[in-house]
Length: 621
Image 1 (spheres, rainbow, N blue to C red):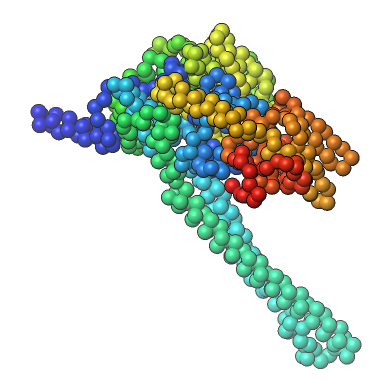
Image 2 (cartoon, helix red, strand yellow):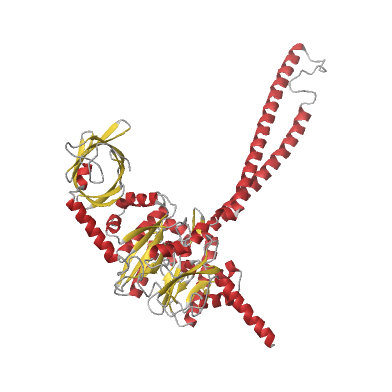
């Protein structure tokens, strides 16, 4: 018996060390964004400026920057230039970039769901330690599965259609042979000796006509079958490619956790603990008393028992106890942040789908049987979750839930609880909630009223339209990660005073050298498009746009310079971006303008080099 106990103990130790990679015994304190000031992190990834999700991210950045620092991750220098070009499109973004409330960092990554693959940060003896779990993009996996199912369905339908056409063709040939017995594709029937010469000519013409029709039909059928077989082969290759999971793994995102932490902190983390579990950040929510919330899906994706996971979460992530809640039903993401949100004190917000909720009653009649059945399952799951939470002494706040919908990528829940909650540097609380245009607006108003009343006085609220993110199985919380402000590049005492001194010194050097941004722009610039010319006259602090007989004037000032990209404030209000292509060409990207400007008339007695000196040669960047 004693030997068995020793083996069991050693097995447990082996599990602990195997599951935790470089984990060693630490007294860890894991950061809780609901309790301590934080830095909001958003990963712009490889999305382009037309991406709807990217626009949601930038809106989140602006709303979050009103109450504290924000770090935007880009993958390369072009991503940084693109951000400066876009900043004029979103009120406040240029200003926050200029005053460095929003900063940009270069980190290798692909997807926007930084909440799920970003690092958990802990401290031990005042040193930073990164907890890095495994990440597989479940959203991408579900999209690929849906596309593969569609391709296989099309393959089956096409194969059945080809088989049916083949059978019909065989049957039609047999019937045609019976009808045209003795007729050989238009050759005359010489055995019809009793026919007159006139009758023979008519019969011959008829046979030739029918023979040509049969030949054309056979040719068309052959081409259709050939095209069908080619399409069937392409669908097979497409489905096989989608089945190759290795080709679609988010390895770069999985490996970016430590890089994100190193970009965010002035003092490098002392250690990175690799955690051998698939653990998305959106499926682990920390409560004020040290307990953590997740869903039973965490057990399924790791193929390990809840007891094993509970021990690992307790020893590594410092979860006093982990509550495994029921996820939302249906072919959707199973993260806990899709239906639960920690509130103030012992309160926990929970999505509520019951038909007896007054604000939901008028909308039940609009639902079909399948959707009703799904919502019943969601309601049952939330009732069970409420029982679990109340058994641990939490006060559950029921929030009317928006009904699930069918989108471009299938079923999704437009949740109002997938929100970003952060403590500001001053110790206040700010909340960014998702909203959804033109969908159950009365339900959304009631949900907001409950959330705002529960938080009470002293909490600032903002709202971001998030439909595109919801259709992709997420919302505000999924797109935004929060790291501790302490020791970050934004914290006082970690280079901020030096940064401020350098900026002031550069401003002084500019003033001493007589550098004047305006003089680099002065002159006449033009843009030609479809035979129409647009002229832009830059004068000292004044712009005049001329298009035909129309003209418009406004004042301007250069408020920020970042390499080739300059930010201008027009008439003291709105901002716009100019990007220097070289000293004789500008790219102006704005709401109503997409112009490549060429200098046609330069001011006399002015040198135009962009470094503040004079040169007789136009030099590129």
